Amino acid sequence: MNAPQQHASAAVHASDSLRRERSQPALKLPPLDPEARAHAPLATLVGEVAACLGGSSDGGLAAAVERCNAALETALEGQRAAPRAEDPAALREELRGLARLLVAADRGDAALVMRQIRRVLGRLDALGLV
Image (cartoon, rainbow, N blue to C red):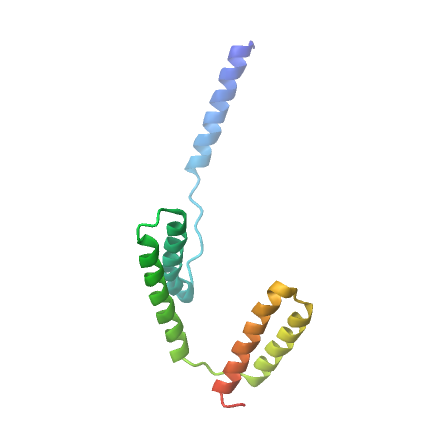
């Protein structure tokens, strides 16, 4: 077999391989859980703000931030309105884990851990355990 025939044979083989790949069914992602589905519009708005940061400042950024803030506040308010029953033992374990994280955290992560501790303490207060 000469070089042009080998090249043509390789091209036919690649074409057949590509055709087989395209005939495979598309990968199906698992369905989103209801909470993730509820957060999808907010995630879209966050993406719009990020996109506006890279573009011109024609007022689009201000409008996108305003829409995003409104949706974020609505979502947070919805979570606050539905207090959940907390197990004090689970809160105790969460605080113990956060205490371990706080000791091991670097300076940048320590502030995040402290905010998580503040949230747990707020939940304790909301339960009337304080």
